[in-house]
Image (cartoon, rainbow over all chains, first blue to last red; front, side, top):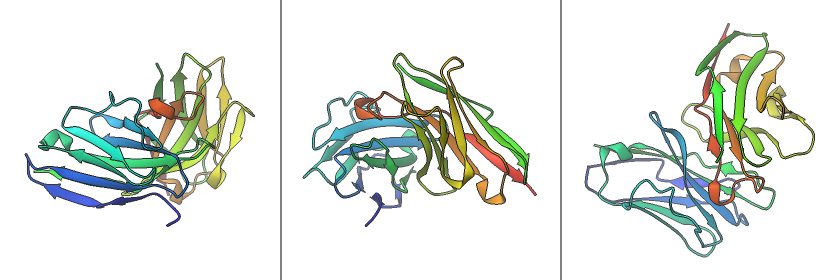
Length: 112
Length: 116
């Protein structure tokens, strides 16, 4: 597709379950970003990939969060043992050398 | 470290009136600045960006913003509001790389309401 796609669009899970969120960046974009949007915290930067490498993982909220990117394309954000405070919209963005970040529609995560 | 302050969580204007959304930034290096718009249940769409070229930046949908270094501001304006402009607007700052390992730092957002 032409834009950044994310799946699922909505995810409802029970507290304590693991979830996996997927991001398909724009073809050819080498940089990929994950953000979290919540009512209390606004838009927070989580992690950045250049190619398959994430140089700094300190933006991830806790050690329950992990992310990977394979083949310089698709990325997955995994949240283990979900908590209610993890409920948010998770946004993915990608960019090329022109530096403009293009955002996907997001995954709305609800932890019951 | 970088930060963004958007003055006014809600701004209400009449259709046809001037839109002014305020953004002030703090950055230890010359920044890149962005305005994004978010419609309900959608992702973020870039309106315009400043990347150290012209200080007056024109974007999509008739919006423009002026970078004022002396005031550390990057306010967003549109001469005449349209009902379709009702949305959430975010100002963002990044290091000159445009994101990199620091990503974008966003303001809290301003909800623009258009009165008929």
